[in-house]
Each structure stands twice: as structure tokens, then as C-alpha cells.
Length: 286
Image (tube, rainbow, N blue to C red):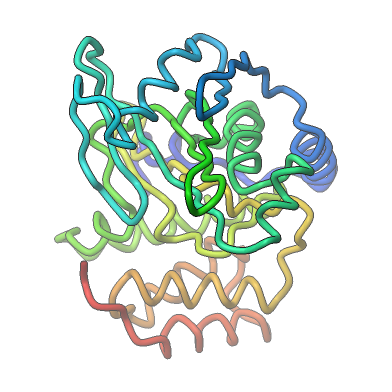
């Protein structure tokens, strides 16, 4: 039997009408950039925009620390092109991600204001009102260097957050592990029903304990694709990702995941997903 906190932390599936409205609302707000107010400022060598409640000067200072132009703060590498920065006079830490130019298409996206940073910026403003947890946006920056223009995104840091797959792999009890897999599957169905699709989903989810239960946060929002329909092929791809990062799955765990996502354990799609869950070799533990 599910605990009360677990039931509160897992969203229920929306109705068909709510799902269609969510798709339309997400797509319109996302691609038009609605609901993402910004205060813009131009500095020597860069331009920045700051979210409501933050100053452009803070974003410029985070960029200076990232580029080594200032030393009055702490900076820690946490992942590829990702750092955590804390200015000397700030108690809060900030997550800072680099988006370098890799090919000409990135220049065109930036001109059309639909670059990777723009997508993440819009998603961070649009998704929370829909009930999806994401780190609050702080600001963005564009700096021009020898390799061309590089974009940066700053968000609030999530203290005590743990990547989902790492938390799952260290769960001791079989029942708790199965419940975490089911929670993930229910969240995945909710995101898909609301029009939220990300290519690399599992590793972009972090979890954090709260009085209401385990919270699931979406990160790396530049991969959001609101208009992409979750086809059978894409769903199976994400189930293989889950199997790869979750470690070896038992047949009972696979059946529980299928029922949590589809609402049933039978049918051609259920059998195909089961093959994906049980037949995908796990990734090496990081």
C-alpha cells in the first residue's frame, strides 16, 4: 500500500481535455516566449538578461567569475560545461551552464531567438505553472570570444538534490526501489500528457526529499520539445534509458513500471516495453 506522502508527491494523469489544453498552452507560451519577463543590460564584451527578482549586475558577475575575470567568489565544476558559483557577498549558490557555438545552425537559432539558452529560459518560466518542478531561472548571458559567441544560463542551485538514477541505485529495500520506479513512470506519463518531451530524460532528473515526499525536478531544459508527439518509438527509447540507468530490472519491477505508465500490463505495447526494460544492459555506475 502506498504511503500518504508518496501519493501526494506523484501527479495524477490529466483528463484528455486537460491534456490537449496543456499541449496548446505549453506550445504557444513556449515558442512565443510568453511569461518569461527579463531585464536586459549591455556590458563591455557581453549582454545579459535577468529574471524577475534578480539584477543584471549579478548575472554579469557570475559570468566574470566563470571566465576567470574576477576572483571574489567560489566556483566549482560539477559536470561538463556546468559549474556552481557563489559570489563572495552572496549566501546563495547558482548553477551556471555554458552553451558554446558548435556550428552555424547555433548562430541562426540565436538570431531567431530560439537557441538552446532561449529554450531553457522559456521552459524554466512556463513549466512551473503547469505543475512541473524546475530550477528557478536567474539570467542568461552572451559573450563573444575568439571561438565566436558563447551563451550562458544561470539558475538557482538545488541544495541536497540527488540525480534520480543515483538515488535509485542506492535504495536498499526492494519495495522502496519498486515504488521509486513506479513514481518515475507516473511522472513520465504526466510529463508526456502535458506535452513535455526530452530526448535524454533520466539523467536530467534530480530528486529532493520534502515533507510531502520525494520531489522530481527537470533540469537541462534546453532539450525540451513541446510539439514533439511521444510516439511508440520515442516512448520505447525513454524506457530503454530508464533500464540503462536504473541497473538490472527484475520482471516484477518491469511489470510495475508498465502498469504505472500505461495503466495496464497487457497488450502489444506493454510487451514491447517489457522487452526494452529487461533486455537493455545497464550503464556503468557513476
